[in-house]
Length: 153
Ligand SMILES: [Zn+2]
Image 1 (tube, helix red, strand yellow):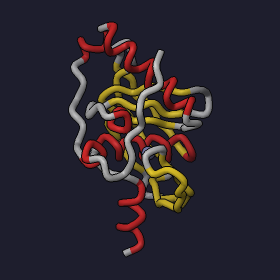
Image 2: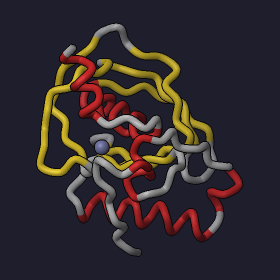
Image 3: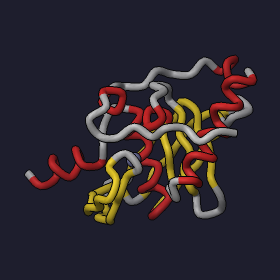
Image 4: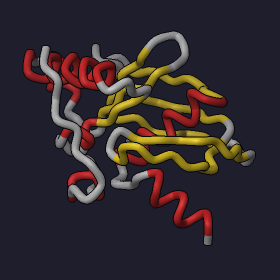
């Protein structure tokens, strides 16, 4: 395993919409190693989530701490979002040393593929839902600081 370089705010890869992953790619040694390296990198940085664009790969993959261990999601989509929003503090490995309050949906329904290519659907709320929204934003080229700016308007 290897620790990957985490890119920081200002790197154009963080403002790009990431591309879908081809499911047949998931079984390749290269992709498996990439996922292991992402997890290792997240742990080394004491993160609770990491998205592929943060290590310079513009693909729709992230790892999020669920509260019961980390979960890797491929091509995730939110199929439902609660009307209710909650404000909570967030930081980001790509915006080191900063924290701010962000409004996020309280709960969500998610569909995605697992690392084995299995299609899954689940609901998340509270802290886990917040991590998922933060990581999903990375796949859409958004940072939490952009949300803060928009919400302060
Ligand atoms: Zn982040």
